[in-house]
Length: 404
Image 1 (tube, helix red, strand yellow):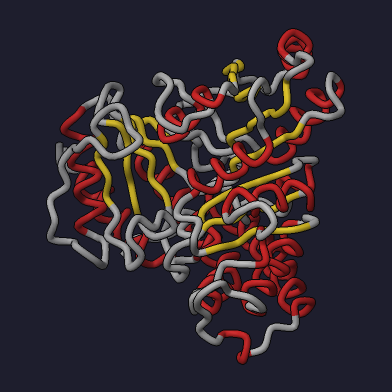
Image 2 (cartoon, helix red, strand yellow):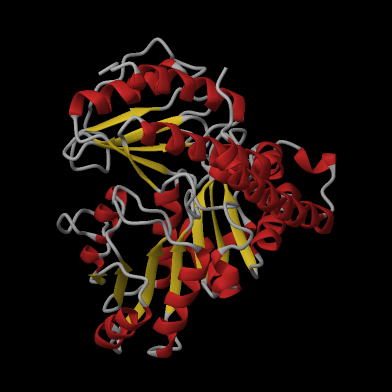
């Protein structure tokens, strides 16, 4: 049986403290919303008077410390939620600043791969990708040189995506926002919070962000929410996003919860603990695989801003076998052999393991990455520490016995 090393127990204690703090915030949000079992009636049609939907959004706004929230099963992914926020706020002639290299599926949204149908570029909204840094002096120069009269929004991706940069901590996001807003008080700061929810005792809204977005089949869904996405932030921005999701004049007043509210709320209720379990698995994975010669980012002792553990293999066969082993230890489709494939939104073949109860859920044990040099795997999730330990035990045994 895999044993938890003594020198990572301090990390586990810190994670437990964050779990407790976030559980307190979640419980407070539920008490304030006064949710009743009768709210969970299956709603259809326009969704007028859907109390479960409204209380669900009250819970999210309260937890994040935001003025308002838009939480819907009709939002199909984190990329969809982000796109809603972008098109809600930006208008032709506006400029978007993107902080660091964006995630692959985001590239088509902004038009990085050409003026794709419906991209921001097709609508006359230009973007500029800024260098990634957390150095205050470098940030001053970057924003002084790049914030112009027509600069409307700064987009910050908290997690690293398919990049080898560090994940941003919320305190670093606070610094970026403070410096950027010195050069434009009207600047809207929008944070992609995917994979980062409940990892720290604070959230980007508390750091000065105006709008944040994410998916419900990642951290906040706890493996329970079957679909959905969210945006939280300033009331006027959420109203604009709601008009984009439905129609001007309708906004948040329509859109039935379709019976999903119970699952979404139950997911949020369990999320602090589940995110804590995923973080512990990531710490152990980094600890043991680094001993086998795999490059890891972050290491087992670093502060974490998301649940993602990066593993740099620099070998295509090692990468593929690792991802296949993740699939083998998944509860669903463990008999499937993973092979590289070109997926919607990506510009290169991707290997992706996700044998979860919710298709594509990355709070369950999952791993993926572009099947190109340097052959990097982005591992995330784990509903329970024990399942992660079984997986790591298998990895460590295979790696340390010259499995490859």
